[in-house]
Image (cartoon, rainbow, N blue to C red; front, side):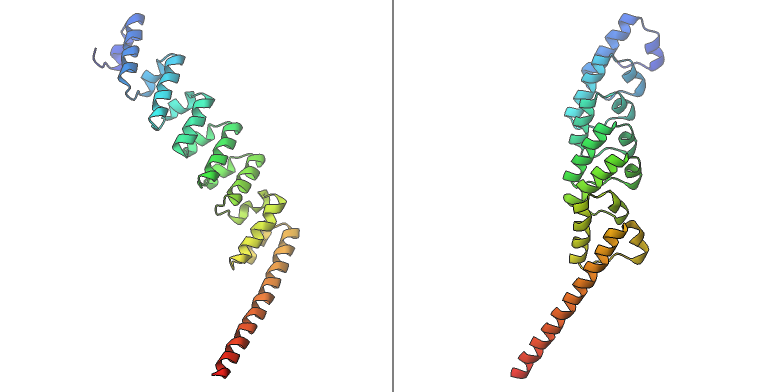
Length: 207
């Protein structure tokens, strides 16, 4: 049997169509949207399973048709999904994707993040911070209480500051905590530098 066009395929009898589709399946080659649509439900699952085993990309029409379990396997194997694929995931699969992305240190784009529910935004922000990845301060409000405090502490430990233009991302409680902690750290560093200068002068004088 040889390959035929869509027009010639449509001229076949039902039995010939079924035989031709079985033939295409036996080739284990990529199918375009039309011939994929001619597969039975079981054949579509089998076809997608084969592509997943080979860690191949799924076309949009294949991804939409995939079962929830197959989409999970796809997310796990491919490490990330396209923005269009992401938009097709239900909340459970988005949650699964977020967890895997954080563990594998893959970040969502701003467009993907904005499509999340508040619950998933909170989950993403905390997973991202804890693993850790770079979390922009505009997502600060989605951190839990402990991670909000830790976010500020780690920022100051790295010698970084929050520009005044970004203060509005912090609620008053944590802005006050940031300003107080920053002042205490600056005073501590000042005293430490004074002590180092004193020690250095004592050593210098001894020589």
